[in-house]
Image (tube, rainbow, N blue to C red; front, top):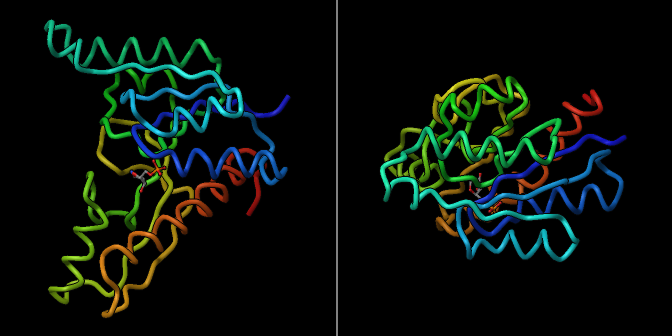
Length: 200
Ligand code: GRF
């Protein structure tokens, strides 16, 4: 049986697509058994549906509106993920920080992708933050990392793979962004192969 992946998304889902493609082309011995989004209009949901992967939409807003709060959301999210019986949970553009109410169900089996090098620019604006730091002469390069998520620290945890991305002074932010996304699509698959197949 191939490794079961549940992928959590919030948007475009190009990294989900990279996983689906790698599986289709037999570059990755895995199956995506479920995709969950916190946003209804996330294009990644359509990408999953197209290849008949079951999807769920689970928004946080009702939990904050009626006072149940984040912990209850994370617990329900964990229950939804567990229904798919995953070996690994992949955060591929998932824009919520997960608390122990979620993470404690999946010790060392949650993987996050982040568009910055280890220890640099955590948070939702990593690419723009790195670009601004470059303009100020503080860094020469940025990068991408894939790491395990053992606790609620933001964009931190044991590194599975990372790769530097050079910043060209003539680079507009858009082209740096698209180069980083290209590296993400490749590095995420490399990291999953490393975890699943023990590839170096
Ligand atoms: C990626 O840059 C990911 O690292 C970040 O959000 C983006 C998601 O892109 N956290 P996509 O939805 O996979 O296209």
